[in-house]
Image (cartoon, rainbow, N blue to C red; front, side, top):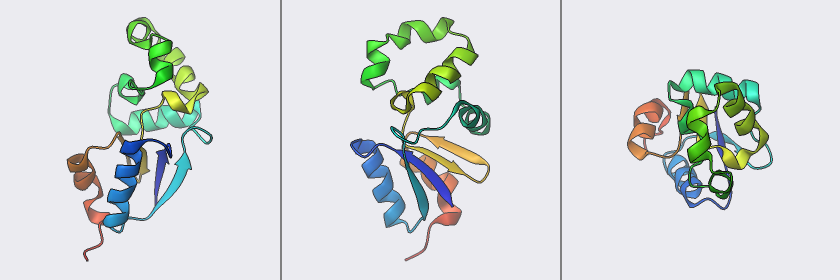
Length: 123
């Protein structure tokens, strides 16, 4: 079963969960604010995703802007970036889907269709 990290006030998360529900895909929901991934999990998810680490940051978030991370991240060592992401779930891009051998960060419907096609229940 998929694990989905979301924030209940996020409109993108609501859209993503609706898409999963409409396609009959079962998932376990985790609140990214209160039950965010720890540093070891984030390292694992990053490796599985194949994405640059900067894609794991919620660049639209208040904390990201207040901390001026757009200026700091380019020179910040990866270990510090992982520690920072693990310190506050609101810094993590959402929704984040953890599946068998893959990780999706953010909601891009076509990307989700491609990765989750085998899980879609034909209605």
